[in-house]
Image (cartoon, rainbow over all chains, first blue to last red; front, side):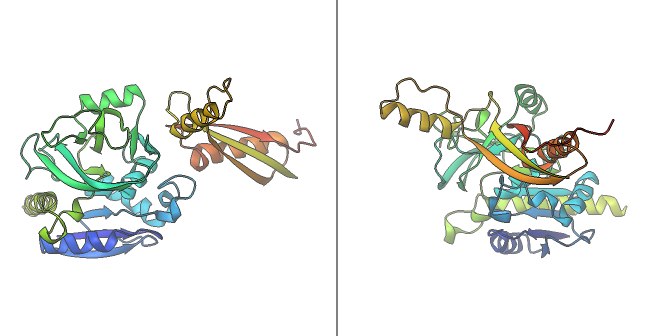
Length: 237
Length: 89
């Protein structure tokens, strides 16, 4: 099984993602330059954090037009997995693969700190190694991570259980105080209706080694590998 | 013909504008008591080669929907500054 980490001009978490996934999963991981159009060998695409195209106009707005994005739409439509982390999440919303938008934090500051999150769904390929409503700690590092969607879209997200991660306190309480950026419903991460595309502002790849502060992120990549392995076995039969 | 076009992009009224609110408070602190509803946006100027003003406007509006604005959070207004000729019927 193979992971592909996309590099846009201005991505800066690509190496972190690559190395963390490689260390945790021991699967093949390769970089995918944003102009590439042959990605059919890849089982899971990762859109890393950073400042693609310098965040010009809006975060993720220009990256959407990179040649690789057309292939990623096909990849996702075929049911294959996609994870967008931080700027990657912004790209996924701009590309229409996930609903809503991310814009300027309510306090206008760039926020860079460890953050508690509650795992709201554990039946996804990405989250099935976590326990229900488990509290994890991943770092956040963004200036424009405030999730917004129209009330009807928000309602649909909640009804379909597409909210995967919510900002919370150490005890797992989802409160306004625990919300680091003013996101509606404390949303930190969502998935599409099929559950194969995940977008999240926090950085799981930065919590895959005790040396850098913790290992809460490991279960995401390990669980995903397990899911993809089972999927591959089923496909072969 | 070449048309000069101005595009104004602002957050939709339903979207909270943190920059606008902050500047509004700053202005009020400076003594501008009457200031209300400060909103921050983007101003883009472009030149568009088109047959007539209406087509230049239509092209600019399409650009807004596709890239310049994010319709989920933003609204836009297009102004064709130099419109010399009417569209051919």
